[in-house]
Length: 127
Image (cartoon, rainbow, N blue to C red; front, side, top):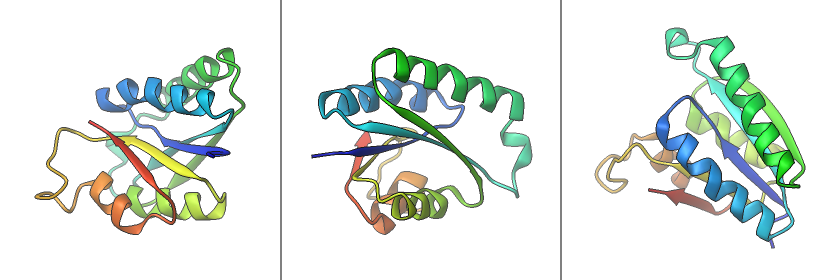
């Protein structure tokens, strides 16, 4: 059902906790996983390139050790828009992402809320 799972990852605790759920979904559907890192040009201090590279590498290794094919994509821009663009470009079947504990109904400006509004495919939000 899900051939390709897109997992946007950043340095947040929520993303790290969500990684297990994304991996579980990909493994149960014999999917391939695409790890996506988005760096906002307006907020370069928020993303240490070395930390992001290490995070991507360790997550990729975890995914591949579980027997799930994995690809890494790195982009720059506004996260919600880039996530949706990559989902469309790669024709992914589902986006799996966490939230930062926000109420998606009240905080329509959160990345997860924007992705839900704009995504070309289903979005699984892990609280």
